[in-house]
Amino acid sequence: MSNPDVIVVGAGIIGAACALELQSLGRKVLLVDEHHPGAGVTAAGMGHLVALDETDDELDLCMLSLARWDSYLSRKGGIAEHAQCGTLWVAEDEAQMAHAVARAERLAQRGWSASLLSGAELARLEPSLRKGMAGGVRVARDSAVFPPAVARELTEQLVAKGGSTLFGVPVLRIGSNGVQLSSGERLSAADVVVAAGTGVTRLLPDIPVFPRKGHLAITDRYPGRLSHQLVSMGYGQTEAGSDALAVAANVQPRATGQWLIGSCRQDGIEHADVDPRVLAQLLRSAIDLLPCLAEMRILRSWTGMRPATRDGRPIIGRHPALDHVWLAAGHEGLGVTTAFGTAQLLADLMLGRPPCINAGVYSPSRFTHAYV
Ligand SMILES: Cc1cc2nc3c(=O)[nH]c(=O)nc-3n(C[C@H](O)[C@H](O)[C@H](O)COP(=O)(O)OP(=O)(O)OC[C@H]3O[C@@H](n4cnc5c(N)ncnc54)[C@H](O)[C@@H]3O)c2cc1C
Image 1 (tube, rainbow, N blue to C red):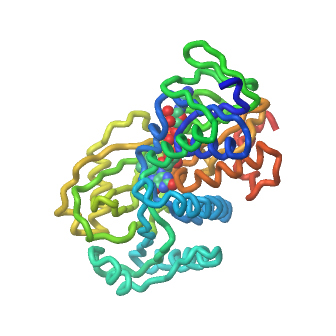
Image 2 (cartoon, rainbow, N blue to C red):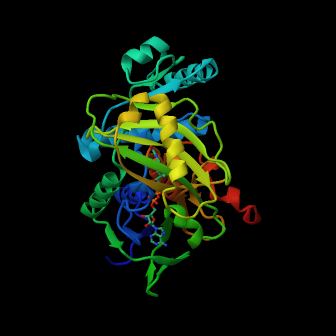
Image 3 (cartoon, rainbow, N blue to C red):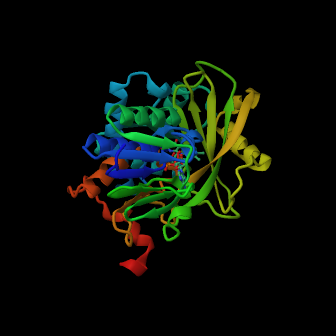
C-alpha cells in the first residue's frame, strides 16, 4: 500500500474494530501487530458480551457497543461460536439482592430487558445452582463469543475493503508522522492509533496501562447442564490489589458443552504462569455456586493479562502531547463487549464529528496533567 492515512498498532479486538471502522469511513488503514490478529489478551478472556452498569458512562459505552454487536452478529450468523445464553446475576443474600434490584431497574430503563428472579425461579432456570440463593437478575440479551475469531474476521473485512496488514512485526516507536518498526524501518501516516493492550506503556511511557492478571479453567464436555452465563452479584465489588486476590464466580456454558470458569483479578504480577493456589481459590468459588462442578473434569487452565487503568476507565482519544497520535486501550475486563463502541467513539473524535457518548471521561489527558 502507498502511505496509509492511518496506522493502527495492535490487532486485538480493539485495534481490529478501530481499523475496520476507520477504513469503512474512507480512511486508508494499515493494521500492524507483532504477532497475529487476536493473539493478545483477546485470545485469553471469556468473551461475555455483557451490559455492565458500575457507572452511567460505563453503561453508555456498553449500550452503544452492544447495539453494534447485535447488528454485527445478525449479519454474521453463527460466527465465533456466538451463543445467546444471557446472563444470570446470582444474589446469594439479601444485601446482594438489593444490588440485583438496582441493576434490573438500570438495565430495564435502557431497554436492555432484565427481569428480577426469586430464589425459586432461579433454581428452576438453573437446577445445578446451589440451593437457597436469594434470587437474581436475568439479562436475556447478553451473550458470548469466542473473541479471537472475531478479531480475525474483522481483519479479513478490513483487507476486503482495501485496508492492509503487517503481522509478526513489532513496533518500536510511535511518532506524530508514523511509526518505527523494530527492524528500523519507518512507516509514515497522517495518524497513528495505538491499540496495543498492555503494550501501550512500553510505546508511550506517559500512558499508564498495567496488567491485571486473571486465571481461567475449562471443563470437559457436559452438554445441556447449564444454559446461562452465571455470575455472582459479588463480581466487580471486590478490589484487586498487589497482595489481594479478588475472586467472584463466573461460569460460561460454551457451545461445545464445556464450562468456562472465571474470574479473578490480581495486580502487580508480571508473569503469566498458572498459580495453583489462585486456581484452587477460583475453582472453590465456582463450586460454591455450582456444587456439581466438584465432580466435573477440568481439562485446561491458563491466564490472561487485562489491560487495566488506575481509574477503571478505558483510554480513548487524542494523545495530549503527540499530534496525530490516538489511543484506544485500557479496557480491562470489558474490551470485548466495548470494542465496537470504542471504534465508533474514536472515529467520531478523529473525524471531528460530535462524539456519540461523553468522550471526556475517556480522554488520555486525564493521566498526563502536565500537558493540560
Ligand atoms: C480472564 C479474562 C476474562 C475476560 N473476560 C472478558 C469478558 O467476558 N468480556 C469482555 O468484554 N472482556 C473480557 N476480558 C477483557 C478483554 O479480553 C480485553 O479487554 C480485550 O481483549 C482487550 O483487547 P485489546 O485489543 O486492547 O488487547 P490485546 O488483545 O492484548 O491486543 C493488543 C495487541 O497489540 C499487539 N502489540 C502490543 N505491543 C505491540 C508492539 N509494540 N508492536 C506491535 N504490536 C503490538 C499485541 O500483539 C496484541 O495483539 C477478559 C480478560 C481476561 C484476562
